[in-house]
Length: 392
Image (cartoon, rainbow, N blue to C red; front, side, top):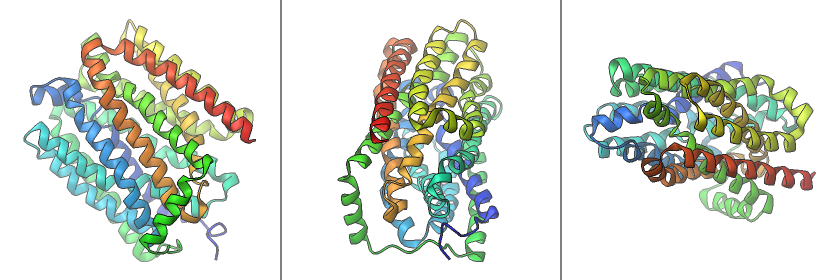
């Protein structure tokens, strides 16, 4: 039975979506509560942002190892164990007694959670034909995006009423539930993915893959996407908190508009793809991301930022989902490694973007940061549109 003709196990998909929900919630949970973490350890939001930077760097660098492991031992099995271990590392975050300890614990979460989303995507790449993959991936994204939405909302609400430590306790519970379910699923239905050769052969495939011009373009675009967008969007919550004096629960609700926009994109992805094509999706995505950052910058009331954050999520996934789909097909002979490398470049970009943006935000505020990011994202969308058009 070939992977492309096999029936997709609905139960396994549900458990993968749950694990991705927990991973996405953990990924962005610190954004709306940066001011509280900073206050708890008597520092600035820019300094406290290292809990995001370190997480992103660990998440990115671990992708290579998880790509090798997933191709060797099976994508579902690797995701199951990584999800369970993420529960342990999240509990260490909750018990942290200093900012340095919290940052180190977030590195641990990044290392363990890194396998979940890219290897889930790689598994989908094995079982879904390419012509249907962008729509299926968009639907799968609904679990991940829901984690972004509710993760940011719950992080703000929980931090406001129970303290920031309890945020990580809740994340640990989510990881544990999804990890146990996946382990049971793997025992019932062994991972059908063909086992890859040893690490030396995998490394050879990685080097061969990196020499392909199309692969280099996709990976570079993923890195820049992470730098430009998340370097700026990470500080939207801190910007709104400082400008309007909002509580962390309201900050969490507003910045979670990003996820709402992503869900809207997920529901409309098939129709948008038919009308705009991949080149139109990346061009409009870049333009609308720029518009969203302009609106956030000039907001004179908190409610004005709500449609802007929704637009930011909608437009981000117009561009990102197109790159994701290309990543699942750029090296079919080592799909887990290819998607993991793509994710690695994205999260290295996020870590680099936050590291660069933190001193800018502390010293000049949000306006220069957001406007610069908008211009760069607009240019990125235009460049990718040109490249996709030429390839077609």
